[in-house]
Amino acid sequence: EAQVTQNPRYLITVTGKKLTVTCSQNMNHEYMSWYRQDPGLGLRQIYYSMNVEVTDKGDVPEGYKVSRKEKRNFPLILESPSPNQTSLYFCASSVGQSQETQYFGPGTRLLVL
Amino acid sequence: GEDVEQSLFLSVREGDSSVINCTYTDSSSTYLYWYKQEPGAGLQLLTYIFSNMDMKQDQRLTVLLNKKDKHLSLRIADTQTGDSAIYFCAERHYYGGSQGNLIFGKGTKLSVKP
Image (cartoon, rainbow over all chains, first blue to last red; front, side, top):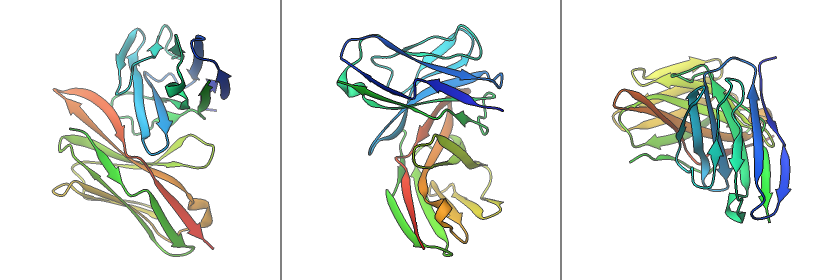
């Protein structure tokens, strides 16, 4: 089954404790991206990756890091989480440029205390 | 600048048509999308339209694009309770020949009353 998986689905942490949210896709997609969804703000892109070892900032990259060492995985790293990073995070992947078949993961709900 | 605007709420009765509207600002947008998000779930791509098209129909869904007014709409015919969800409009445009980010609106929450 074609899918995008994220782990964990729910996470409560404290300020400053490094965490990683994993994202994996089994469709051999080149393009992957991370979004955060906040009430009243919709979805905002954090980082995206066009292919292995190719990553670039989205609209709200501050406080986040990503890596793309393998095609299937695109982890989101919060080196020192802060309460304003409490949000719902979505990973997405698609074949390439046109993205009309973009697949979203189920979401990771993060609470930073 | 880049901005995608949608009204936040829409309420309709089951069996009626729903029309969700969206405006965008970037005239260089090439693809425009509609996504559906059901409670507790991720986003599901419903349909998309290329900017050189005026209309696209897919079963109960009709997308209309007015490029002059930068207005996009999604019409759902015979709306069902299962259509209750948040609908996001999104645009993609290009900078200097390379792909830009996908810009989402804030989402329209559609409530369908039986």
